[in-house]
Length: 151
Image (cartoon, rainbow, N blue to C red; front, side):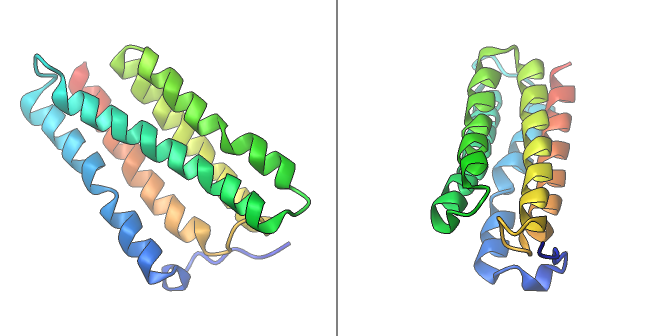
């Protein structure tokens, strides 16, 4: 079992910069839903929901890539788990917006927990939780704020 490295200095600089840059659409969407509300066309709602679904699917696909690269003892589980975030995001699109955000929040939290476990067992880089935990916290906060703006 590998130990996790929660020091953000161990995170590759490109991953850190791109990860944090990827928060901008979450922040913008949450703020704009509060400023303009769910406007008639629902543009900001669609933009935020769509982006959240894409990112959730992308983050799940990371485990497909890790399984392909490692082909370790847990590869079958990684392949199986890697498709669940995309399916969860797809289901979120079919729900009323507040429930969709709840599904997305659950997906991001579950994926973050899985990411940390994968790093602890050596199926993901040891530094991965140092990147994923703070990013997930901001994403979840933005989705909660957005859901509250719709109530």
